[in-house]
Length: 341
Image (cartoon, rainbow, N blue to C red; front, side):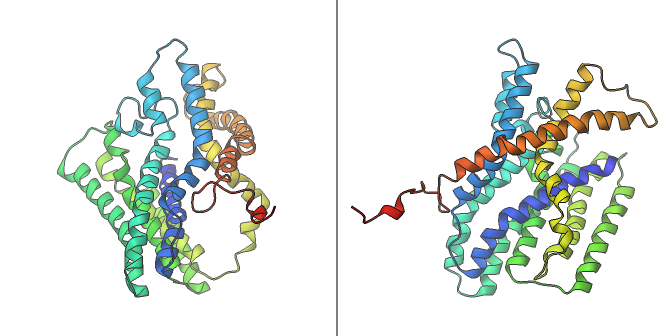
C-alpha cells in the first residue's frame, strides 16, 4: 500500500507523453503545430471546472465564518499551494499534483513557440528530432539536479512539503514522458517480442521498486519517484511503440468507463472520506480488515459523484473550448454563408 504513490508518477509521465506528442510530431515533421496557448487552454478546459468546483465547495464548507483561511483559497485557486508547507494539503490534499501539472502546462505552452521557431530553422529531420528532445532533456536534468540538491547537498525535514512536492521534484517524470513522445514522433516502432519484453521489464521493475523502497530513509526514498517513472516509461513503451492494430481489450467498455471517472475519483475521494469521518461512518484506525469497510464507504459515493461530474462539470469546459478553432481563434459559425446575399 505504501507504494501506491507510484500511480501519481504514472500520472505525470502520461501527462508529459500526451501533451508533448502533438508538439513533437509537428516539430519532427517540420510543420506548424498548434500555438502554445491552445495547448494550455485545452488542458485547462478539461481540468478547471471540477478542480475549481471541489476547491470552492470544500473551502466554503470548512470555512463557514468569513474571512476564513483566505490564503488557503487563494493558493489553491492559483495552483501555488505547493509553495506552502502549511496549506499544501488543505482543502483537497490530492490537488497538489494538479498544481504541479499546471506548472508544466505553462512551461510547455511557453516553450511551443520557441520549438516551432527552432524547427523552422532546422533543415534536417534528425536536427528537428534534437529540437523536440531539448525540453524533455531539460526537464529531466532539472528534476535530477533538484533531487540532488534536496537530498544530498542540503538537509530538509521530512515534513518540508514545499521541498518534496515542488514542481521540479517531478521534472524527471515529465521529461521521461515527453521523451517517449519524441520517440513516437520520430517513428520508432518495435516488434511484438520486443514490446512484450519491455512490458514485462516495466512491470517487474515496478514490483521490485515497491518492495525495496527505503521508507525509513525519507531523503533516499525520494529517488524512487524518478525510478518509478523510468519503469512506467519502459512499460508504456511496450504499449505505444507499434503501428497497431491495438489490442481489443483497450476498447473494453468497462475499462473505458473507469477511465472517464479517474480524474473525478482522484479529486473527490478525499472530501468524501473527510465527510464520512465527520459523520462517524469510518472506523477508527486499527489492524486487520477494517480498511475494507473504509474503502467501500469512500469508493461508492466517490464513484457516483465522479460519474455526475463526468456528465456535467467536466464536459462544460470542453463545450467552451469548442467556441474556438484549432488555432485558438474565435470560431466562425457562419463561414458557410460567406459570399451569399
